[in-house]
Image (cartoon, rainbow, N blue to C red; front, side, top):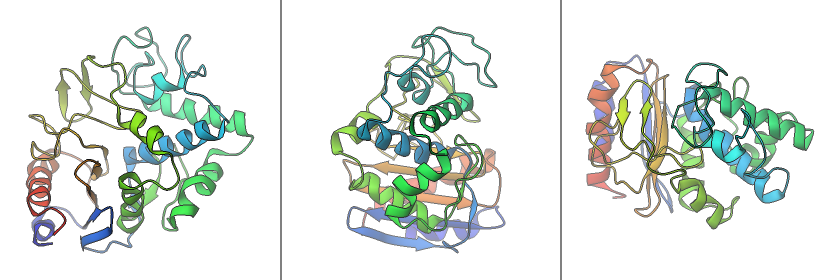
Length: 270
């Protein structure tokens, strides 16, 4: 894809990108086998393992997780009431959209207790191994600590486009905005009114100020990471894009990511 040539001029020491449709990868550029930290893109993998655990009956979305009154659904949609940094409680569950790493760490610990399996092991067995994601290291915080490759993440994006591990209705729920209408902040990007989130899946695409620009449809979902990484999937449009870089997120990303994403949408799967 010609769109992907844009990464050659980015102000980063290294970058790799891939695009997929439900039929497979349609374009890639850069060293897509290089393992890099993916920061909060980890949350997408963590969520998938938790949703598989829900289907298996190991946990339920209504299980108590996080602050008093909060559930697994709350923590996965950043509405548990935790403050942005740490486990200080500053709101009642379901009342505010406050981005929280702690909630995801609580969710993974809940699954460990329920299953008797370390979370990294559960994630490997349930998600990484079945998808052939041998280049992904799920060690560290389940909220932001994983490392992976573009080759692996585009496999995962393909699963989001055409799920084989998870039931379609479960994935639909993950992409459905939870507790709609809440205002919030996407860290490093800005305030959104409303700030929409599914289960682990950010849903503010196609809106002014978004890190992917305005061309990626509102039907898309995904996540970006502070290590200069992102993954988005437009399930109705049948298109996904994954990018990893060797530079932490900053103004540079807000300059170059939107033109890339716009070009990927314009070029589509061709």
